[in-house]
Length: 336
Image (tube, rainbow, N blue to C red; front, side):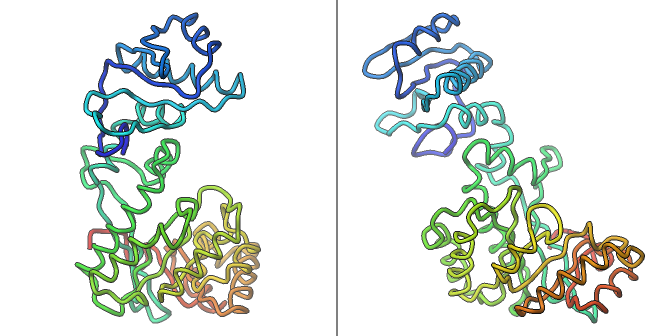
């Protein structure tokens, strides 16, 4: 839900009231000093707004007040349709992001996206699987996955987006891929608070579609460093107990470190494209690739090189111990 409990809404009312809790007399005085109109102060505190811009200003001032005074005030829109429903309380920064990025959030609620797939090949260039990639379903309303997930994270909706995208990929795979073909599907570990509970819908969807869990590979994708490695280990254990393999993405770049790889011991190790591109003629990249492959082989991980565009890079990686590859050399992402 974006602005209320009980229904998925991607629009809000341009005029209305906003509640605050917990609130103090000093907060009311501060907001009135800034020119905002108090609607009521009991049993809860409510201020009115007459436009989207005024609502955004109200939320911005609340967020700054929280920072200035060290408070943790939450906010909720008073909506005409919420009769009988409990209000949806959010951090001021989350509601501000939802109002500011209302169009982008509509993509999540209305599922205005589709899955494209990119082939993954073995040493003989035989397709053994596909990675599923989120793309806009309409050119009229474009977005990048990075932008979409960034807005979802700011708005407190990244768990919802992660789950919806994962289920959509599973459904697409059921429609287009035969049994025995691997389906590499991205997921955000930070969106999964309780693996057994949060992934239950994923496991049920696979079962409902009578798919083989052994055909699935879940890829760990993170835009920020993994802070609790034990939590991620638990996610790995839960998925593997269902027969699902695990992959660590972007190894050698970003936030996927060799130490994390060694601790997690993923079934698939995906070497980042920044190391693979031009590696045939780059001694520094070659040393890094060989180090990753050596560590992966020590715990039985299969190494997959990403972003392969040149045959000489592909051949070098194979000679060094990689067994799988992905990139424009073998096929661009496209509709299944």
